Length: 124
Image (cartoon, rainbow, N blue to C red; front, side, top):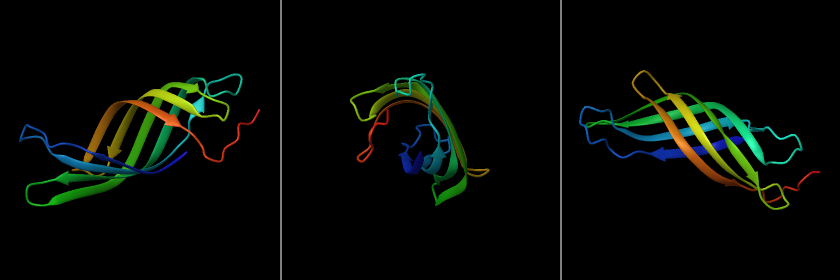
């Protein structure tokens, strides 16, 4: 799977001593392995991903940014729906974006998604 572009915005922190992160931009490559004995998409899955990130920091005077390495690991459950291989995923994702010495972020998130393909046929 190729995540061409993912973008996240963050609100300013209420504590003035915290570094305000304005946005994070990703481009990553990932592989989702579904642990299913019968080749269906209904089972537990694990998905590591690696790529590039840009973390934008909103400083008072100027906006600073750093480019660097992004790594993530997601695990959860995939549930196949319909006849064409479409599926829901329910997972937990940890991501570490190491953009530079001054710009980096770690996130832990719950993920619910629906994956479908326009031109994909289910293979038996």
